[in-house]
Length: 293
Image (cartoon, rainbow, N blue to C red):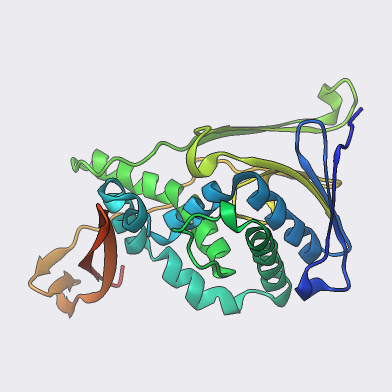
């Protein structure tokens, strides 16, 4: 039987009419109770920040490609790739396209994080990014992007081109039918083959907010669990094996590329990537070129 030993009563300014409770069991797992999904997200943001604030902030920097300006040259290639995939730009541009309910959840989660940071400024690192709700979308895109990026790397390798190393991602997922279990209920299992460290170090929590009743493991910095279950559904994240990438070999001449016998202009954009060196930051202008593919 679980024993709850920590009790919080939170009331965010943006949700003045809603009380959010965070109770922790003997393992320290937060059980969050609110009246709405947004209220539960507020509590999730507060709890995650309380437990692993720096790790969360690093995840946001990883997603937007700003690690090297804080942690040095070892992260330059990482930042170069994330700027190429434009996680930050896509999240910023399309955040407004989310449903109002989803925006409310993202904004509530960030309000919870900021609430903890405001109460405990001594725990906020000097390199903390200015947090915005779109960071959650950028992080989600960054997390899922590893799978198609890995598929593309495999295609290049099979074509005789050695790509930059890409972290391995794999997993298993399976269901057991009610007729095959002693309790005569379906059982869902997921087995993610991921590191215990870094952005895939999961965060366990339980959330109750209005119609939301969910238990599972979340990516740190995201409001909901990506592995877990509600009263009615089971949710898992697995590779599954689909082909998620296409590789195109382009014939390039100067600032043009050839497509179906016609020369077209390459498009480009420039990013500034900072690289910390001692007490200074060396800013590099990096130009990316792309085709309509």
